[in-house]
Image (tube, rainbow, N blue to C red; front, side, top):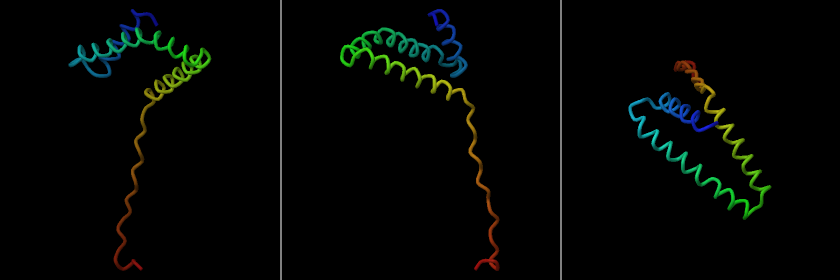
Length: 97
């Protein structure tokens, strides 16, 4: 996804999710985290590959991508309400052992 589309998608998602009251503060934090991760990811990946090798890096990236896909899928699933426990009528005194 290019930067232009990411900007539009992030703006829409934040407004839908959190409302417009504190949109500026929330968007600022989200943008800062995105920028920091884009800046630090290549350096962290190079250090990781130098320490453990490229196959370990690729397997780790595959695992992180699978985890992200699972979390995104889980976030979109509607939550089911737990079933209510059935209340039993009180047992009359004459019927108790």
